[in-house]
Length: 222
Image (cartoon, rainbow, N blue to C red; front, top):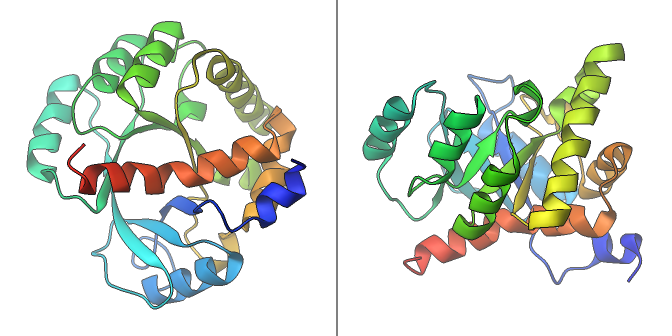
């Protein structure tokens, strides 16, 4: 199946794994939800603000854990609890930290891969993520905002991650991390951006479907 056909298909669900409405960003949650729906998403995860229902699209909470120690992450997980309509993302760190948090119950995705040192997410992390079903989040915002060497650094990090993904098949999610409706991107635009580090349209579509699978698993008691 060709990439364009996959991106146009309604058979798979499509989610932006993190957006930041007002006050973290400058657009309201309702406006960003409407924009996401119009761009072709059926789900968005919102960070830093309370969720509220929006017509035509599922809105879930994205809880971002920014602790820099494993003990801090564990304490945050206890505080967050186990609500079914919520995704918990942890900012990545060094290799030992990534290995530890990937094995924690209640962690759904590791983020900020582009900010990690090279090889901080190694084959051990990749294998563990595959076994535990922990996704690695691809933050698209740096690809649209960075220039020159900084952008090339992000591309290299994501290309390295994609090679591990091809080998170990751990889940991926994709976040625009948009802070405005002007920063939101359609699935087709994401496919074009992800192509710069070698990700295929089919892989993009699968990654856009991961968040819904996580939520369905949680609601089913998984």
